[in-house]
Amino acid sequence: IAVAKPIRLVSFNLCADQLALEFGNVDQVLGLSSMSRNPVLSYHAKLAGSVPAMRSAAEITLRLAPDLVLVGAHDARYTIGILSNAGIRVQVLPLWNSLTETKMGVIEAATSMGHGTRGSELVADIDQSLANLRDVRARMVGQPSFLLLQRRGYAQRQGVTAEVLEHAGLRDASDQFD
Image (tube, rainbow, N blue to C red; front, side, top):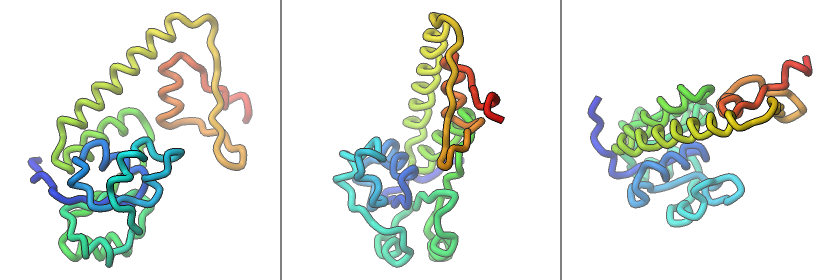
């Protein structure tokens, strides 16, 4: 599907901020979440400093008149509905639970911003990094393990991080804690 290159875009959450800054041109980005400037949370914090931080409110967003609004799966449905009803294209970015979903989502997000080639280039970089991890794994002695913990001590048994660590030759040790 050919998508007209959006000239103006807004992002409502940190994950969407990172995609907007990675694939959009900075002059396309009208607003980002306030977390986009936090260097502890945001890979692109320095770059985000050149873009206004904003609340994810319909009134503010309507005033900016973006061509595209990037939102997360848990952003306010009411706000999303108002923007959609006003004729603004809203792209809901789902949670990506695997490397395959992540790579497909990266290409889809970049394409929606009019920069599909940038998304394909990042996916190629991801694939190259995974190949490099296979080289590291080939040099390992034994099989180290990992345990991903979430809040309140719950072990995460799957997801993108676990998949990357398994590519690196580490074994998920969460099954030892049932």
